[in-house]
Length: 411
Image (cartoon, rainbow, N blue to C red; front, side, top):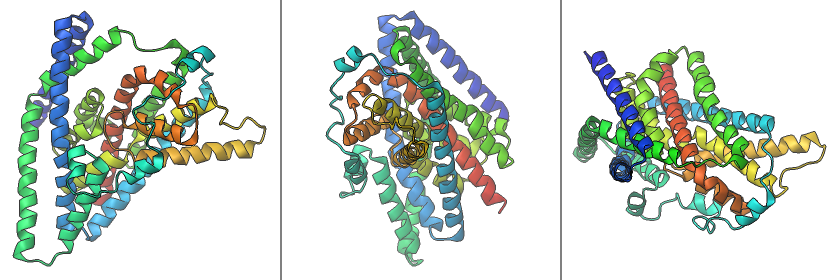
């Protein structure tokens, strides 16, 4: 019965995707405006639910078994798989970049974009790191600062777990659980109406593509970014699953709705409610694993972001002669290894929100004095890159969750 229901849901979502794509290709002003409006409504609703989902999931999990042996084991597996998959994603991007070797943009085009976009020129990478350290318990929730929320929720959950078993602690634990159940009820209601949202997102996306967004002058750069994401999704991550003895097709089938939603929302945080629902109900991951691993992964497991930061940084730096050109192989290898690790660390510190990787990379390039204005040339096509990256991030989150669940069940 459940299997039949999932098939109907998948068929309905695919039909919505096809209808939306056709409507977008018609490029009618009324349809485009309606699609933009509906897509915006759904994106806002998912973000509305994403913040409390992260906060309650982390606080609830840590409050019930925060310092036990299970938590430590789950956390260690989550961190290990996150670092391995993120490192592999950046490495794939680096290898493709070296193989394809995108050339420099024409000088007139670079000169036209000599100034960096104004959105993030004043924030250094150090400022970005400091911005996640909360100094106000309310502000992170108002601003949607995912990493700050994670810190507050983890601290609260850990504090509850350390409290003595009294009536006060019981009230807090039950209160968190009740709020979480209320939240999941709202999530199920939103998912029930999701075909309308998918139609709108698909129409919006296909209308943008019909308008033409890619620039031939950076075709090789785009090929490296998208090619790296596709290789990571279709080859590397399945190899991770297979190495742990998991059925790749089963995991992919169960988590495909979340991956599809991530593609259109461009936000792994906004997709988190659906990702958790699919992991628990379709993939049969233990709730105690899913509700701990997935919120953490949404914040720190950024495969697509790591590849984007590394490849884009190298692409920008090559225009300013930042990359060593001497015959010293050791110096060149050290340079690439340093930026590989920096990309991984940067990705781990990135929040799962739309365009987070773009502005983080922009801040990084501005901080070292690289010609960050080139980021303005990348901006018009970033929406496509961001969609693929986010889908990859959610697929990686799903793989880490499945592997962690497998390991905890068989240890």
